[in-house]
Image 1 (tube, rainbow, N blue to C red):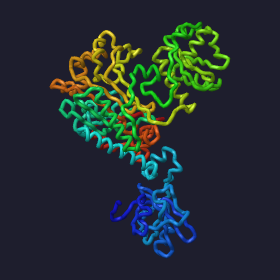
Image 2 (spheres, rainbow, N blue to C red):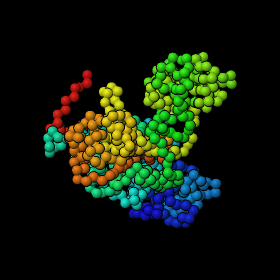
Image 3 (tube, rainbow, N blue to C red):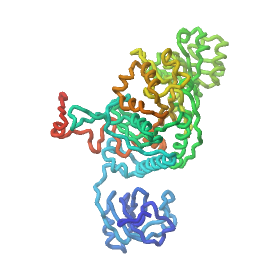
Image 4 (cartoon, one colour):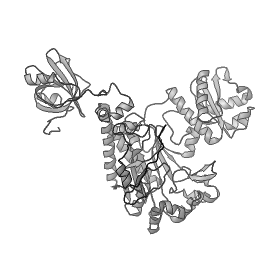
Length: 585
């Protein structure tokens, strides 16, 4: 019941128990049908559809109903009656009843909409975004926003029950580069100075830990000026959390409870926790990805020991030789496509071996002795009808190429089994080596703490250092991640030294955070989940634009309000900004 001046019920509420009841409904005309003296209208609001019937006996209402068009906004008063036998619609919650209209009030007339307000047809993306207010009337889109609302509410309820405090952090901040470009906002009161929009609340949530606010969360807006794709927008929302006096195990336990709650209240799915865990190194070796899709097998197999003993020169000279065993006999055309796919990812080439009843078939089989062929079959677990796809290269590159090849094979051969496969990825390297510049760079950010047993390697071998970093992946997609932070100056200085930055240089960039640590920073850590990504996956899509009310297109533009746009010269003058862009010829 949602009784107001305009309605006593919603369009998704009435059923057999309401028969003979007087009702007032309001909504949009979804469709209109004239059936020999009776006019039927499907009346729609965000709660559902109700069929209403206009009878010639109600002369005024019937006369006005004859003029109704799609998307007209109307109010009707009438009586709930059962539908005639055989005319019920089991697909609708209201399908057993209809409303006989006594009075019709047209609240607003509508022009013919430029897109269909119907789930059965979908306009192209530009039209959908230009007329987003019409697109959101479609039940499928309204349901996605309702799902997002349930996820947000479940998040707040769960975290509130765990003594978290919701704190809003600033949107106008100091520029502190975090990997992507900042959005810059000029200051009118301080000419020549600029604010940045936050790429994340990272520094502020750590400041809150220093402030004694030991459990913080926020559904935070994050803004990054970067190239777009299906799972990326210039502005997106994070479920952002930070906690004091905790370690990795505390984070895993709390976040698993949150995710379980979200899935139950969002789509009524019971998840089994705890989620499995896998180290970064194991994930890369087995799946070629730090966010592996576990809905199918086809793991990466290291055959270096066997392959380098063959007489095939390419294998003998390679750092590593790895393969995947495809559970199908691939045609030559299939192999050529996968070879081209691998080469686009940077592979020098790809070798294939077919397993047949007569033995192994390939142009390279002649380089393998009979015993080596048997070892190869045993090592890969290959069976008759399988095909081995082999990459020889440096370990990191071979893993990454085969990881992508694995996903392509899984998709093409329909190997992926529907379901929710969560996995924690742990023990990420704290640093990665930049071959071009010959320097160490942080894999995530410079405030992540190393494992205690690895601190001794900071100076002599940074590549051996793993950090207290963790990501939660689902079906090959990263849901979110975080780390336990460094809270002591001495350790922070050691980490900064590895990347060639002094503590003084860091203070210039992140001074207000590092200075706060001088006054007693507790051990702390946190994590951020992508709210948009969670909602997209739960609604059956990888495109986060489908669960954002007003997203930008692939050019970071909004076709509806036409932003970004020009501004008035007086505004630029107040900001001391002069535009100097060469005119296109």
